[in-house]
Image 1 (cartoon, one colour):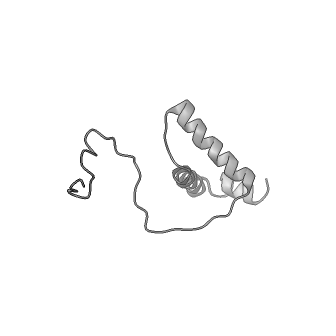
Image 2 (cartoon, one colour):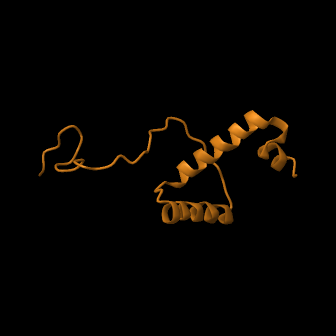
Image 3 (cartoon, rainbow, N blue to C red):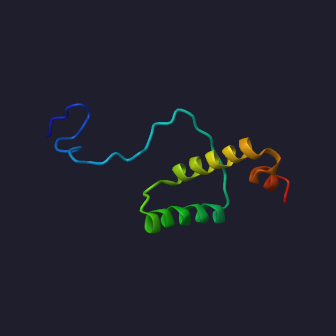
Amino acid sequence: RGERRGGRAPGRGAGRRPTGRERRDEKITVFVSAEELMDLEHARLVLRGEHGLAVDRGRIVREAVAVVLADLESRGDASILVRRLRGR
């Protein structure tokens, strides 16, 4: 049995790159259609394959939310969120 020091398995961690993942304390549940889930997975694969970005679906959703909220803050009534929710 290998001895664990500092919460790591022996030999692990040396030369490893950080994942960029952060611990989150809050959680929401969002229901999406099968098509929306497939679109999200497709975006994940495009980001990895074409842009070299290994990110999970949660990261994509958090970034998308941040972009949309920043657009709402800066553009208000002309924001993409307001226009989409109004059906325009």
